[in-house]
Length: 371
Image (cartoon, rainbow, N blue to C red; front, side, top):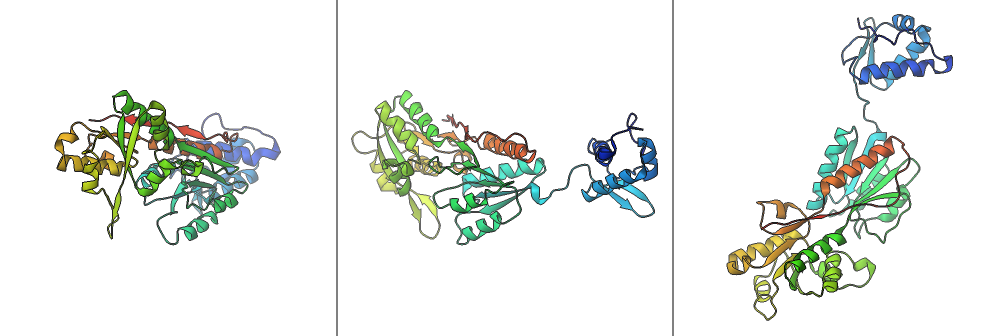
């Protein structure tokens, strides 16, 4: 028979809060481990006597704890502790509406899921890109009872659906590269400063004497670099802006997708021709680090002398720049910190603390210099 801790007996409280008071004391004993899982509580009458109250509020308090999953009453045997943590409910559900199949965002989703599980949340992933029914999946997620939605949005993301989901009691957090020109009231933003990441690269290369660089990326990325409107100021814009200000020059080369395989590659002849003209680039900036990986491979295989002299930078610390610790420099987007900050914000919102600032939380990238 378990006896309640010394000092808890015969506490007298106002009649209007007796049940809540008893429940709170018993809950503290359970969650602290002083009443471990499997231990038998005193009988209702024994607890009532210890508290100096009637049995009725004790019975109600135990019923509340049983409904919440902390204790279980066994007929003819007694009441036993069954859990020392609150059970997960729909109120603890977090929907991760991200491009789960994209390497970078998949990495972030995995990091965040681990943290949320450790903090007592129930995360689920909804893939909002790369599938024909992504929109249907998103709408189903937004129709759920989840209180928290973590969204990574790109141009194809259904922001109108997201805005409709921002109902009282529900919280939406935009993560990773939330576009600054998209403003939705009530949406918390946690962003990695891609533009500053590009500027880090520009300053790094210029300080090491480089003046002419080769920019590699998809055709849409190259188009964005040349753009002047806000909607186009994405992939590498921070680099171009800073590189212009420093007085550097550049040329561009688009990567290709191999049919039927989705493999990213560079045209060998076009790539090598960039280094056979006058004013050849002395550095390469891959607007994704898969292009940096390809450039490194081509130089090692086809122009080993250049491989030792041309500086290579990949934009974003993803599997291509991590695998085998390649000698090229990379921009670390601080996904670990972003996941931790996202989980912290969700915890604060669940606890109904004072509403966090609506100003974006900006996680600064860093440059991992290799080679």
